[in-house]
Image (cartoon, rainbow, N blue to C red):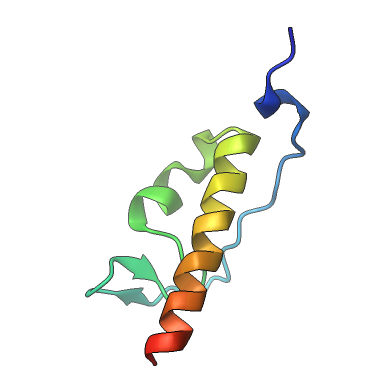
Length: 67
């Protein structure tokens, strides 16, 4: 049986090589990932990576509306 995680394509890291961690929110303002997400990215399966990418969009949008 194939799981949903097996059918998603893998994705590249959203790292921009310009780390700027927002101490208030705990994520990088360049790639929008938390330190845990950055640290464990290479261990995540494609479904987990896609979930992080969805969170990135939420963080980016929230940041844009507050700044």
